[in-house]
Length: 172
Image 1: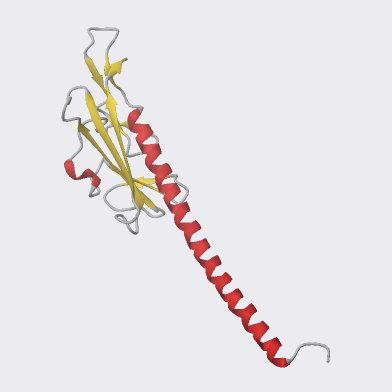
Image 2: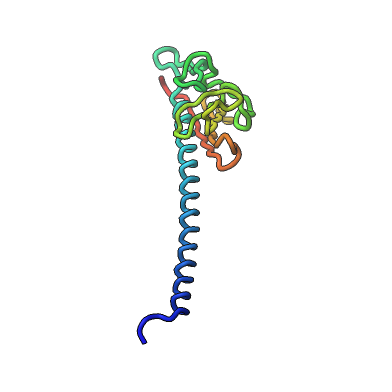
């Protein structure tokens, strides 16, 4: 007798079906992990961009004059492009990393482009960025601790990115 019996065909179909179900779950999990990785990547890039913006501000010694400290205390980096009328590298309120403090928070869209600022997220905002500028306790006149957090607007304490840097005065 040639061919397969009905039992053999049913067993083979059950095995193929179970394998396909496992593969479908694996594809769903992979898709979810890929989406979370994209979210983490955009938040990290948004935080890095804000940190670069803060680090690029003037915090130096005047080498042409008497060596006096020179610092940017008037640029508003919560708008894009940065403009006059802000706090610059002035010390931030202590709560600026935990809450939306005017001048120390802004928002970006899903691609990381600037979306606005303020205490409440504007339409289209997907991520929020908060930053803190504090003196380095051991050298308050010459060094600053810069901190930037970025997280999804919908879940600000979930999977947030936190960057820390020290900015020291140099000759300008």
